[in-house]
Length: 580
Image (tube, rainbow, N blue to C red; front, side, top):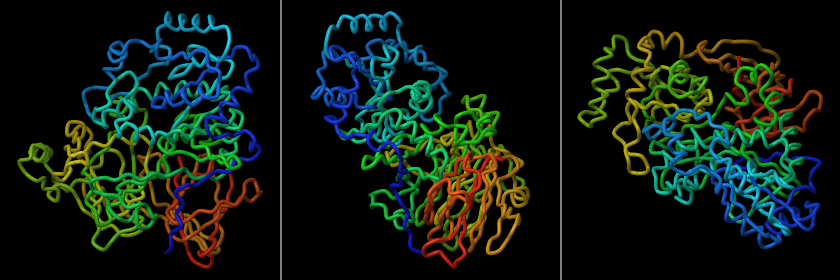
């Protein structure tokens, strides 16, 4: 099978070709032309944390007559005050905190904001540039610009040491702790503000690539988001190395070789992935979460939105251990535990769909019969202390894993993928809540022991998830649903304790699908190519390739998936997930 996996999928946006620019000279010229008062104008650039503020100031200064630059952060609370406020939400743990509830204005001093406004009032002519995180609290200005960047790009800036967290000065801190502060605190605050501003921004600035800014009008951005909410689309995937990584992703997706092999492929996680919007010849990268914020009902469906709010509850990603190593032995928190301990309202139920496997591959799943909890916990503690290798086979079941098997993993079930598998992980979105119990005596890529969370793990292990229960409830749960001319539909999971339903379709002829009031997330798990079409021509035909994840918004309603290209005349397959 030849893979034509597209690592840079774009969404062509129609009707706004003349409303996109690239490069600071063109961007500054557009801003200047938007200023109605040629004597004095206030340009407010609201920035997401980790945007290169100095670069924007320098880039605009070359083309705009800037009389004064006002930095919003000058009105923020002192660092020690901010840290005191968020301390209880960040905890001492390297990985886990608690969702912080702060609104943007709680982090700023009203008196200092007033002083900055007076400084702006005293400027008589030229352009006043108000810039920084929460710049819109100072003033919306004559023109409100939103400077944004992808979540993955933020993580890369953390890793490089170029950026610290907001109000933290922690350039050299452990990357896991930087990510934790972003995830539990600053991204939550920034996203609350972004949701407020998206309907009213004048201009949207893509700052992902250093010194290569791109910009669209707010109307063009909002138009693009609305267009995307009514058609199939793909997210921009990214791939990351890991200590247990394999070699399937690099060979099947034609990724550049790295010193450490790829372990993860993120291809269906709107909180992490990006979208590429193409306006004529200008390609804008934006966080995919912006679509969830802007069009939640169209994208998710009314009932899913009513249940989860503006959150995308399903995620697809790849775990590659082909010629690699076992994943860590782990467990995910129960719903009650994640609510009480971390402030999340739903948990990380998941499943392993085996996209590919070598002979002899296996999955670790559930406890063996008759396991003594005290003995298990004692051996895990001794293993963590380096006294013994953990005797995993004594406590945990192993099951052979073959291509197209689907293992269900409701929260509380001990599990991990063994080596020589490629897992398409279909799960709920709270993706960082993995309690490692045993990591096979490994160090992380940073040379430090990977975090193990035995206390959290012990509190969430379901001791009744033993061999008999696992075999009857979590393995080989394939039920025929329907069939027709050249197609059949099967239910493969997930478990009744989980809110995600999955359906697999084998087909050589076109198959009619319906979103059923929920966003649908699919992957082409067998075959070279398929095309998604609208029975009413509501969207252009959409081509997908092997292993590509694609999203069908709830608003699409009915759609048809048919073999195309080299797959015509062959039987191919998709796996589809949606909220029950």
